Length: 205
Image 1 (tube, rainbow, N blue to C red):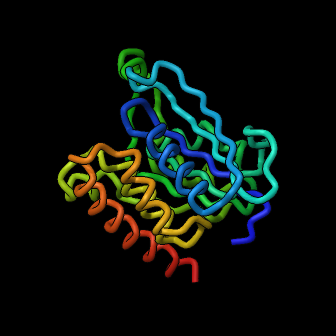
Image 2 (image 1 turned 180 degrees about the vertical axis):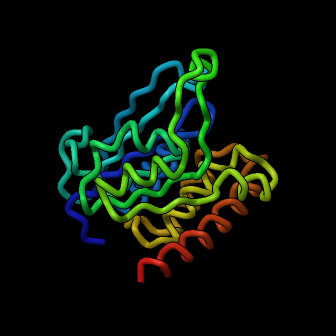
Image 3 (image 1 turned 30 degrees about the horizontal axis):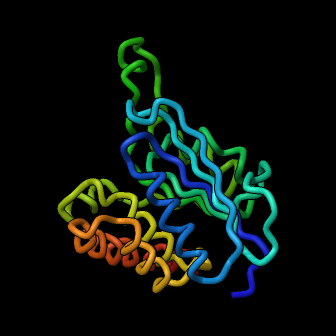
């Protein structure tokens, strides 16, 4: 595909596979002959801290960081993280959000208010009208392993036709990144996600 530049941000919390998801997309973009730049930021990821990974690919790519307001897609594996990084979105940004909220222990201990899905949706609609929630947590459990959530969400993005990377490249990349004993279940998760993404694109049309 002739893509000058495409900016994608994947966010979530530690343990959700944010970094492995960006590794898969990075290798897939290279397999599709794009130039690629990546960067990541994360805090105490092993304790459920915020994790964000940046991916830029295309035929005219320079630095790895995405300018505020310039993401084409934000993929959130945890719903409230989409709000944390909303300033990377503009009016044409597509949000694909797992509708699961993981409340940090500090919020419970301090009896603080935390946004629910309705609050998150209302806030993000002030930024973009392209907000799509996926019941990723529930579907990953149906697949048989919650750790397939990241692949299921990648599948939803792929099925929505808003990602200019081929399915073949993603499948080949998964075989390079995911250990062999987990490949089959992740193949199932990818297909399940693609089905969800196709439903999303039908809403857009």
